[in-house]
Length: 230
Image 1 (cartoon, rainbow, N blue to C red):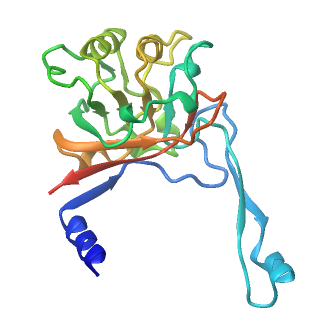
Image 2 (image 1 turned 90 degrees about the vertical axis):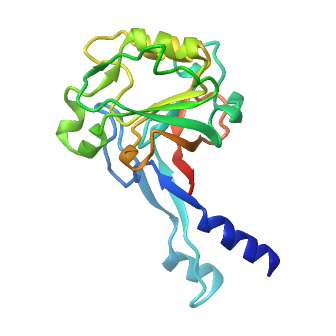
């Protein structure tokens, strides 16, 4: 009873804000990448044949590209000698103090040293509201992104990680990816395809986006969320 009472008091003063897109069978996250397949390995009907009438279990089988839904990039995504998901420091992505910068209406987003003052060790989330187009053709057209200069400013500020509620943190007009190159080259994880950043305050919350511990992978889906202490 003591543990239950303590937990009840805790949740009264904490708000969790889910910042991830739902992954559904056949959904499209990024043009040219395969859609996920969500299916049964063991269906409930088949389970009854094993365990007996009325005793059912479901074992799922999910096949997905690592760049599906809301996902996180680590240095191996960009650099062959960068660390993979198994080498990710949880201090960068778990219960990290965070700020949310409102940059709605901008396509190429610049960031100044002044607005990043005091963000060392913080998650910096960039709100564009482009996520409202997720799952629609408009999501892939003229998406907001950071400038190369913004990436350098973030790296110089020594932030913990950077997230954006858009198709890509870089421009996709050409093949160059200066934001990925600068941030991942500095060991700063990137989280793309966030959502619901409008529900966050400018500061005073923490951010979590933890992927599975997979060797040889530089990107994977995460359940990203904010924790706000009321």
